[in-house]
Length: 247
Image 1 (cartoon, one colour):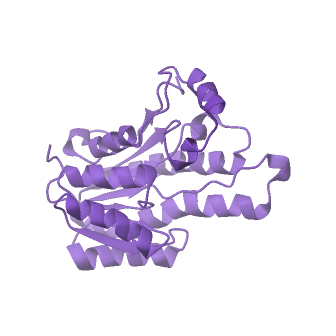
Image 2 (cartoon, one colour):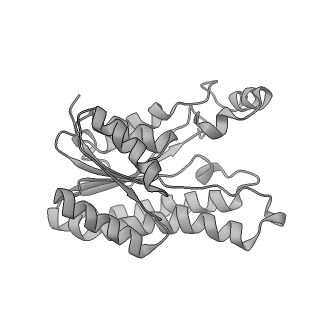
């Protein structure tokens, strides 16, 4: 499929896992990519994989929690490609701990990257998208932003905040033909879940109606759909890619 032919997509947190899978799926459907990571070397690895698919790629090191860096990201995208068609806010971190033991630093760091970072990138992209009178924003939230999870008060709060942000921005930008949606992945196979003991993985499977941990490709496919014209009449939605966990 070439649903995204000639589109320019910005994907944050694209060095590995879900973010990298998203970048490669969008490239496979015809988009050129701007990929960010916390280090240039990490971003360059994904950019190289995108270029092997025959698409252009611009790697950038960006701390999305910094408003100036998020603004510079969009300015550089416009300088290189003249437009922004798709923004995927995937960058995120965890600093898990029980609430009673959670430090202020652990709370602030997660909120800053996951929620403030999403706001920063949306805010920086809004003006060029409004001028174009078209665009797609896809925010990656989480099933635990809906359900909650012990030991992740900071992460759950940040991802619940992303849902509220998504719905508010969707209402503001809908008149300009800009669709803003979120995807809430469940447990997805990544480097982090690969390191879990087998008995923990089996325990996770019992909480998932589909009886398996998802793949990054499952999330990437949903992003490609929301980024395409197939989803032109969808905005303010939270699409669950979680094997049925949040039913």
